[in-house]
Image (cartoon, rainbow, N blue to C red):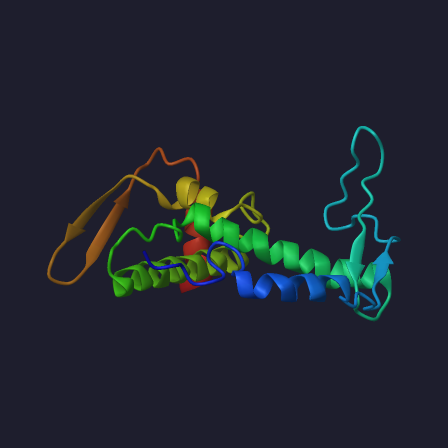
Length: 178
């Protein structure tokens, strides 16, 4: 029976002694500071128990509040956008066996996210859906019952007359097509 390579199920017998030596003499003297004056301004939420203070451990130079607002909150916002794409546009659905097929699915999802972000930024600015997630925009604004007619010169979309966001849809079209 062959033994498994080290690293998969823990260290091998030959590296256990080295870990013990390194563990006892590990130098943890890297200078870090706690930005304790950063009090959660990303989303100003006040819990029923009072304020919601945040503590960020960092080795970056600068004012604690500026580091929290400009770096920490921006990182959290980026993680929210990635999660929004995964959940709202199914970019985590890579169930094909072939790598290229999964890559193409991810590319289509990313293209859809860029289009919906552009729609949100330009067409929905100042409306009720200006801060909506892409799943909500897709569900409420783009999933519309329509009849498509085609002749030699043009393709027409006949949208439902009972669509509740008809004016908003038309104003988005005006923003893009003038």
